[in-house]
Length: 177
Image 1 (tube, rainbow, N blue to C red):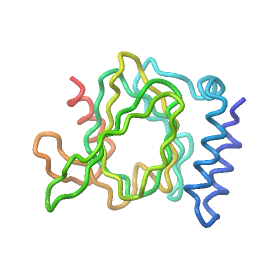
Image 2: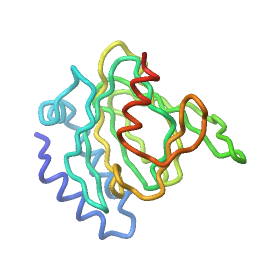
Image 3: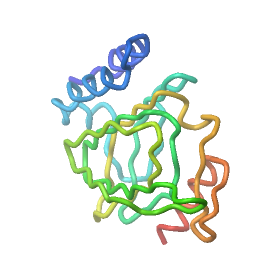
Image 4: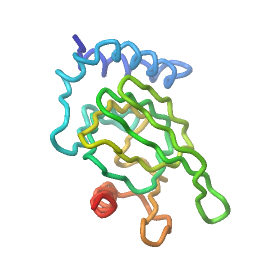
């Protein structure tokens, strides 16, 4: 059975290694061998959820569920991340900077059982294309909520703004109607 306290402790220990993202990815792969244990420990959605399970300036471990058809605004992380979808599907629309604008370059779909080690410079938006809630375990090499330098893009003006979790949630609601 998935042991959340042990998992968080192992992720914290990974921070002292030469490649914490790689170590965390291995830990996530091990956790994903027990998807039913993850579901039992973390729960699966009947509601949208951003649930930090552990948060410090060096590490965030979170459980996230997205509503059917919901879409996040474009945003960056400014830190590495590892995500594992343990229910449903998550489509990631990837962007790169092109002068002062963003250019969509790829769509990456993650389905139940998929794991993705995200690069530090990732810019993306997330969509749940299914008619049921998805669920994913997210681990980041920093504080996901208050990381300095993070940005999000206003979905109406496409202008870059300072990251604010409250604004992310408001834009997600706006984009998902």
